[in-house]
Length: 151
Length: 286
Image (cartoon, rainbow over all chains, first blue to last red; front, side, top):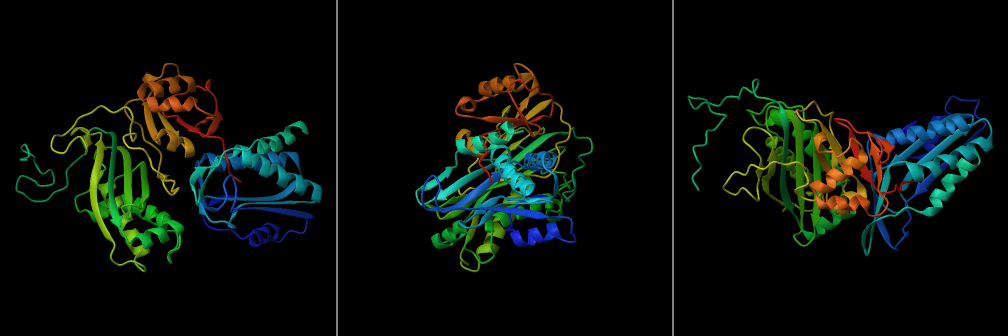
């Protein structure tokens, strides 16, 4: 299940929905990304997430499909928010269910690494000293490359 | 200034109101932009910017209201036709020095009638919705300066308010909507596509600049006729864009990515009529 939305999500509700009426799932890993109040500059008051409607959904679908081809997964929920968010707001949720923990941990990690480098989202941060667009981080690309070397 | 024999198209020979028969008019690409503003107390504007108003996300709600209003203009204005709009975009700019919100709307379709009433209606209803969303804290807000900025397509020629002011201007425009930079200001990302583009006379490539690139170049959406491309690929499109407007030199500054029909692409990716090409900076989601 993949959603791009403005409204807030509840990680607990989403995980319960994924597991409902299932007894074959042995492990579930959930990751939630939050808005920090400091980043490239301190005192981040808010951030705005822009995306490319249409391509976003396709890119997220492709990432989840790749995860499913690499690990035996029994369910994936991926939610990314757009619009204006405040510090401590949740931005992104990845919930991965599998029979065993290793696959669930790794697939969750993989989905986040690929999302950060391939899904068309852009963050603009609003701080006490003005607004600026967040720039890409080399660390994110290094993290995504790990999966290419090990496969 | 006396108008030169203008006829009011909504009145018939007997002076009665009637709806103009547009069945025999040729279809063409029509676009209109309108704008207006709502003045408020500085404290109200600050609350709006912070998202601290009791009714929630004010700009997002006003944007949807404007889009819905554009689509339903024919229900409000008696002699307007129902139109299948291909695009409605609403933008807001928060203006602290003037203590107001500037609202602008752009409507587009391929059809037989203009879309200026839709753009004006979108601005009006977006302003009214801003009033409704903020009235709990400020009842003295004032809506004003609602006017048509530009209109392109159709036999009456193109109109630009700043050029016109008396004389009607007819200008060929290759770059649509590039007349004024898109201002995201407080980060309102302003565009919702409400349908697929229909067929139009000249084969075109639709170009979008996104996020930081859109603000840096001051260009959001542009349409380029296919016959202006030096070669039928992304590299040829970039050359054509730079020839049309110097701002596109910015496509070579920093890392700029490209997608064709929403799939990642490169300079050698081939292009044909009606392709959608997006240029954007490296992604930073998650």
